[in-house]
Length: 257
Image (cartoon, rainbow, N blue to C red; front, side, top):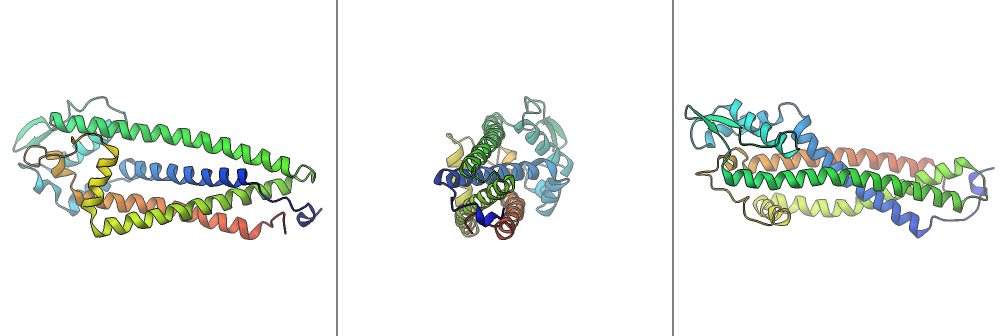
């Protein structure tokens, strides 16, 4: 039996909405994973950034590159929950080895840790929701096409519904992403400030470079490069999935043809 002979039952609105939600959640999962990749999976990224901007020169006092990288690695280990405290994280500044982080910095990083761990938990929940929605879409398609008895038709329609939903989700998020990029290129400080206002309910992120060396190490330029790198990783993954989705829609015939 040819696919074109199985009827004119088009995808229901519930299937289309579920597929778009799958696409949006998948893109968010990719964004969280891209952030984790930048922070933990790219060897030497932080050292290269600090070398690029000669970061130690901005620290109040003389500090080595190795110490700058070390305190960053400890901070990231703390934020992902691999270590429980930053109290023992020391650096040598002006020849004196002492705890690096001030009390205010540690309070701010505790907030960062909560956000990062919440994002990781959200990613897991999102994956479970995606799986659940995919199952719902599949069984909805099976019910819709049960008269055909064709597993090939079900698989083809399932792939098409998911591909179309992903492309719609990507189009919507790309509009938002382009807006963010334009704002960031025009005034990254504004974007950086708004980001903190959205994700933090206090002003602990406002640090004094005279006393809080964290802000001297994690400069705005480093954050800007991090945002570009994360966006590039996310963009590459999103484009690959878009290409696959477009290929599916092009190669697999619709049941309504």
